Image 1 (cartoon, rainbow, N blue to C red):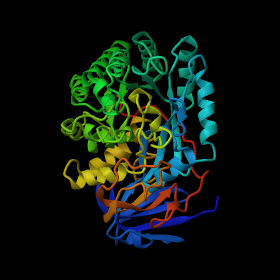
Image 2: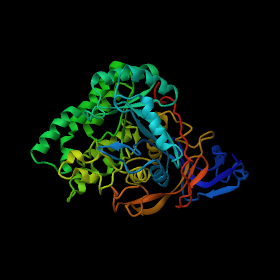
Image 3: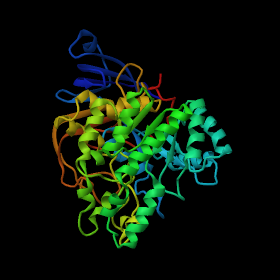
Image 4: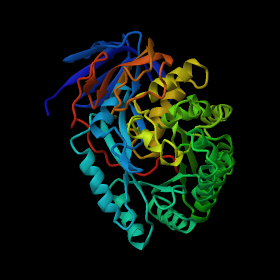
Length: 468
């Protein structure tokens, strides 16, 4: 690799712990030093490339620990693959994704992992890592979990929902959690009581309630809260930590808060769709609500206050996207006349950093908390810190120059995700990514894409860094 140096000058450097006017020196893909702007140290740096960040924020590249690129679901595939999805991530200031490799029932974990490596290999604009979805917990897969942890796949997702697809029963969940308790892995849980939900789905369809809004009504808040509670108790019995994905409801936050108040190693994430959208969107006319069908579902607006409070009090630690887009035409439409056939998932990987910056302006969170939720804590949670998630000597030079004054309108006309609608169509926000470096290489240059498929590297992960 050729020797290269870049200096980012004059910006407000924001990390989870500090805000300081500083220059950042990058050499061969890593940050080698930071120094106060105008100091003799910073003034003495010479470099082939200088980026003027005056009046801008200089922040770590985002870490999105929950994406589903090229994922099979309901007879179709999510419409962003690793090439289009990571390019859109870069446009939105996210420089690392952690995607989910899927084990098929009756098959080895390794087989699923190899399939995901093949999907992503030489396709990604930014760096990537994998979690493993466990669809079939048995003696063979339990042994495989130990081997995966050794090679940097250190988290395992299970589903209390989707019977006959991904569902694990309490016994399987307990066995897998006992395994993570011994091998250091982190279990991730989709916490919804899928067995009960299926009864309500069947009853709703039989009664002629087929519109998208009924998707939200049958996936009841109480069934998310119940499953969250049950997952926590199973983790306690197993002596394992627990990470609950896409928390959407106030009662589920309360279960996490109660557990954390007892000092239990229980963590939770939420997503922008739960913070900014609601059941009002699911009720949009002419089947428009199908665009917003995801699970856990969007909730009535009053749940948003609990989620924001959870993010402030650290009962929720991470904002991910659960990016899993399906086009309205030809994919979401599979569920016309039967909401249970609408592919579950929404686009979002491009907008997370911007929406959370808007949340700073709206007074929900502080600037440093923005970086903590979107960069530092996801990196720590999934064993990537301080390589990712911060700006310090030795960190990868994943750097975003962010214009906090720029005005933008979110729209399908301007986004870069490979999907035919925007979940935030017409939403006006302040703040925009201007320039993005991934390991020192410019992938977005003043709002022009200069990256390439294949720059992004697979990144093995360590263990969760938030456990004592």
